[in-house]
Amino acid sequence: MNAKDSLIPQEPIPAGTDEFSRQGLLDGKPKDEAPANKALEGTDDMLDRIAAGLYSMASMLVGEGEDSIGLVETAVERTEIPAGGDAGEARRSSRTALCTAAIELIAAREPGSLAAPEGLVHASTCIEDDDLDAAGISRAELEAMLAGRGRASVKNWIESLGTLTRVIFVLRAVAGFTADETAAMLSQHGGKGAVGWNADAVREFFRQGMCSLASQLIHATTAK
Image (tube, rainbow, N blue to C red; front, side, top):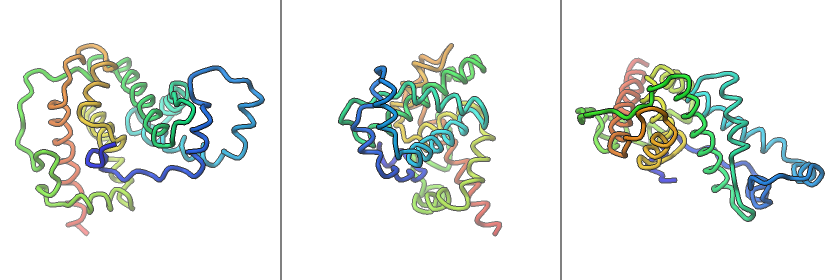
């Protein structure tokens, strides 16, 4: 993942994930129960941490509750890691599976909510070309806030966003997908009217979201 596109610090990959990934248990093929159970021995803590991370991301996209739990289950079913794959590949595959399933769910329950914008005009915002310094806050300061006690308030802010801005922000800033990857996911899985998404439109919504977040964080810092 491009470090510039992943603004919220990535959680450390749990110990043992590389070894687990190399076993090829998530290659999409049926498994015999006994060998699979043996391979899973001693992995409860690792799997719990992975599931918790996926649930957190899912809840930012579709809200807390059964829908997010279902997305985690879907991500596990759809994740495909060839034997010999590493932990980074596993993380990326599982996030892709979860986010595409979330986009499909949103498109089904809110038809047209992920449609590509028509005649989108570049808006003058406090951030140009993803430059956080222009908003009066450095990337290091933002990362420190998002990794610390401010994480809860940031999540509340995400939940208050409109559907399009929220999805784009989570895919880019939380999941770490590029503008091109985000546009492709929306076009392929966003339902009616979504085929027109492109990277420039994604960047426009992302800049607006980041400007809103930066303003909120600066206000919160000033108020203390």
